[in-house]
Length: 266
Image 1: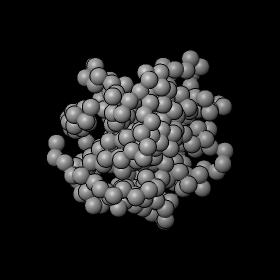
Image 2: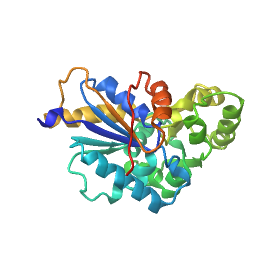
Image 3: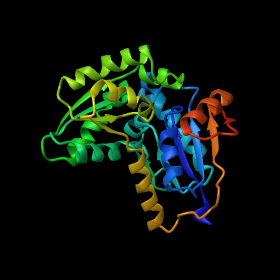
């Protein structure tokens, strides 16, 4: 039955587990097929052509699992590849950029919004286009490319002197422009949220779209009568890089033990 098909979730590495975690919390009966492209992380230093190839290969892999929905838990793929799918996936496809943009507009009092993301996402202009397409009020968007963040997070370094220095150098130019809301434009970045909060103070609203996306996914599946009632679904994890490293680090990211990770070559 369609309702027992799984949900495909993918990211360049471990960061998309923030979205997978939200899905397991809000949709506990749904099976997830997660793919982490750890052999090619980070996407932020890759060309658009490389990213398109990586993502289309991952999508074909997940389509073979007969998924009932696809979650692009990667801002870069949402920015670069989602507009090019053209019906290639015969299932609902959710990207993170629209959800983050709408949340930021709802939260921002002065409509001066900051975005931190990798260089490809920033260069694509996807957040600027999306926010301006939703808001008619002349919202101001300031972006900051943060190429040093993902390598630290993938290495499991979430705090400390080096992280403090890197985050401060990237965040302070945005704070000086009086942003009141900050979009974490990469699913890895929530792991730096406590450091950002320490630097920026409690007045800054920090946007992580994972929960909002999961609730929208729940609505889509409910409306199409495809919500699963499966008890204790067994999620499957796939990577293009080192499976054991992902199992160990991914368990920390997900907040629960990942027992098995499969390495695949696409």
